[in-house]
Length: 72
Image: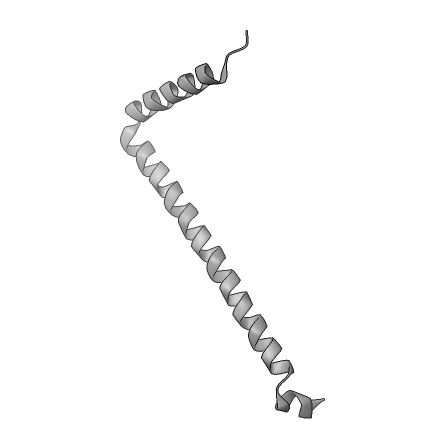
């Protein structure tokens, strides 16, 4: 018995609502915690990329500096 995507979507939404009503406070806190975690990981990823870019630029500038040429 095959179900259409609309029926599956409605069943999933109904199940989600029932679970949210049954375990509302704890589940809602868990969902919010997951969203906060996802945002923090995303921010850490962006900060890591910015740090890597900055360190790369510092390295590139150091390579072409007169002091580094004297050290060769």
